[in-house]
Length: 58
Image (cartoon, rainbow, N blue to C red; front, side, top):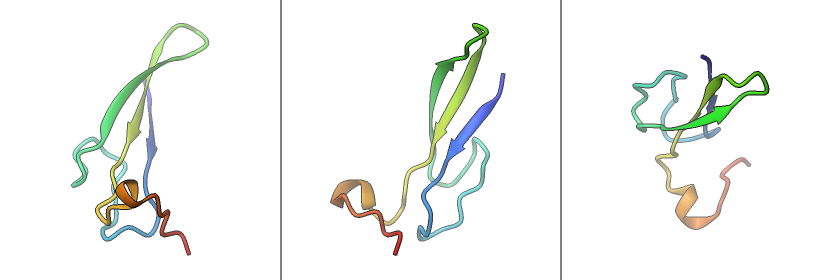
């Protein structure tokens, strides 16, 4: 089992690629080609970009 972390860039805090990140990431199971289960860890921004649609990347 492995985990891939998707983190926002340029957020108000530095996100850590661990399950106990301040943003409380959402874990989604993803079935791998070999039938095993990997985890997609989706971190949440603290600047609210998900709500406004802005990516704050520039």
